[in-house]
View (cartoon, rainbow, N blue to C red):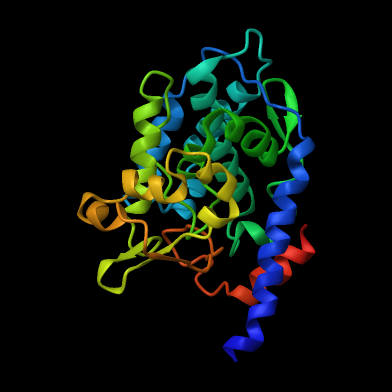
Length: 277
């Protein structure tokens, strides 16, 4: 049975990679300077737990907090005049991406997965900096060229296998430290990244394979990133180069504190990917 399934999952992986590559022609995204992130910070503290899971049901039921999120997204949508630059721009765009993902889920909740919804990442349905953009344009055309591999620990894809959503807003001044903390927090999740010194191997998120080019550009490549950002108890093991790297499967079920998406399986994810590309 396992051998029979491998071609299907390889096809799914290839489909995902091709989809990411297809957004290479997206324009970069600008965002206004001086955005107040305090509402977003408060909402994260209220609805996101220590594992990065979201209480979507309670959030959707609170009319005041739904309105607060809409108000925050309106500030993100405002024309970028003047535009934010440097760390302020990167922090605001990370917040924008994550808030737009959460808003998209809340608009469609309950849903088993973000993949169950139409073209969640590729369709330009969101207004940022006065322009209509896709999530892919924020991530691939703007943040990845600016932040490289650190991008991948900070963005939420509303799924159980994505890096955990931070419980605070990103900000310009502490952005470097926040990004490093996000990557360390992700690598410290044994259900998402597993380090096995006695077996001389690591089982890590497939995101490290999907975005291999970003990680290989870091000092020491992927292994250098793992040695620097993995939990301290594994750093001696990871400092050596001769250990095997394997990749886990990706769980696209919703990152919900409640039951939504608990029964969302790999085959459903595969067909949703084909249906909603």
